[in-house]
Every structure is written in C-alpha cells, then in structure tokens.
Image (cartoon, rainbow, N blue to C red):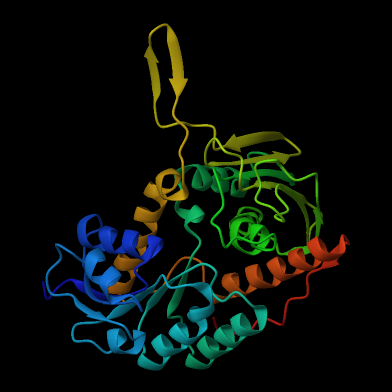
Length: 336
C-alpha cells in the first residue's frame, strides 16, 4: 500500500464519486487517501468499501491528510482556483476536472501562479484527448493524411440538461470540450466565435436556448462548427468530422452493441458522458497516475484550461449579442 500514490479527491458528487471508484477499483498504482466534500455523508458513501480513507468537509484538511501525495479536483468549477492554488502551495501534483476555472481572469491567475513555480504541477481534465477515436483522428491529422485541415464539423448532444443549466452553460460547460478538442486536433488557437440561435426545441426547458450552433475561426484559416443540443431526448452523442484538402475522417459513429431479436435490429445509444467516455476517463487517470509516480506532469496543462475559458467567454458574449466576437488571449508565460 505504501508504494501506491495517495490521492486526495476534492468533491464527491457525480464526477468525484466516479473518480473515487476509478482510483479504488480500476486504475493501478494509486489509492484514495482522503476525500473532501461539504456533504460528508455523501463523501462517506462514495468511499464505502475502500480502506484507509479519511473524510473531510474542508478541502485543505484533505490535502493535509496523512498519506496524500497528489490531488484530484472534481468539485464545482467556482471552487477550482482556490483548490489549485492550495495544491501549488503544497507542491502537490494535481489533476483538475474542467473547467479549470470558469472565468478567464481566475484562469490566468492559475497560469501565472504555476509559471512562478517554474515547473508544471497541474493536468487539466480534457478527457477527449484520451478517447481512442480522437487519438486516431489526431494521429491522422498530424501525419498529414487528410492534407491541410479546412474544417471540423462537431456534434454534441445530451439526453437532457440538469435543472440548473443555463443557455450560457451550453457554451462554457458543454462546448468547452469541443473548444479544447479543436485546439488540440488542429494545433491552432481559436481566434473568433459566433453563436447562432435556431428556434429552441419543444423539449428544452422554458427560457433555455437549446440547440445552439457555434462557429469558430482559427489562426490559420480553418473553421470549426459545433451543433450543441442538450435536450435531444434520445441519447448522448458526440461526433467529429475533419475535412482536409486531401480527404475527410469522422469519429463517434460507433455504438456499444447491436441487438437483433424479434425480427428487428437495434443499436444502443449511450445515455451520458460517463458511459460514452468511460475508457477515455480510465486512460486519462491512469496516465496521470503513471506520470505522477515518475515525477512528471503530462497531458493538457493550465494554458489549455485558460484558453478554453477565454474562448468560452467570447462565445457567451456572442450568444448574448448575436455578433462575431474576437478571442483575446493574454501573452503566454514562459512556464506552464
């Protein structure tokens, strides 16, 4: 047990509980050493069956608990800046779920704080970079198999949205994944965004602008469009098609099972992201654990988290104004 990486998990909600399960039963080389959540009973329920785990209401107490060597942040986004800075102050390697920090000014403070350390400590949880389909598409694009990339066509659909979901959250929560994936796949920053508002679906809650159509421009002239529809009613679907000068490639059409019975064939459609991207989350956390045990930090970093926050804020302004909005990134520090 002493050879295992002791991880403090901050947040025991839907995502945090899944990561606790993953660290406890799926990935190798790590154990849950401490958990923090304001709802202590929920935290205790999440760690049921795991031994040697201390449970706390205060995140700082979890970070300071015996055996903690690293942290995984899965608390709500507004709490991330304080938690990341607390990890930096303790020299703890940290995997932080997206959004790194919801507002760009706070995200920039995190970038600058890590730069002052002179070394990386944080990996940001953009798990699509670990999905098998996305990795194949990235390799194809990097290898020039499609020629110069011209467009990415993306689809992001959910069965339904949580009760607290707002129109802005379609951009800064849902489309934030496409923002990072587009930057990573193309190796380019996004420079402008425009959000179009079709007539809202009858299935959307009152006042929610759903679906939305988002158009991004990149620094080298490619275009990225995203259909985001978070109350489609039938399943969780994520697709991406890259179109280049020499060809195209699409991912996301695969299904988990085809059932044939009673003269009919039916395909399963995943109902949420924890099902659709289960393998990606497993690979992400395993890669983080392996790198941390070697004293390294890999994967998307704080600059990626900051860039996504800036682009998402521009998208929300476009949603509100109906206008094209330019993306204004701060100068990138030498470290981070």
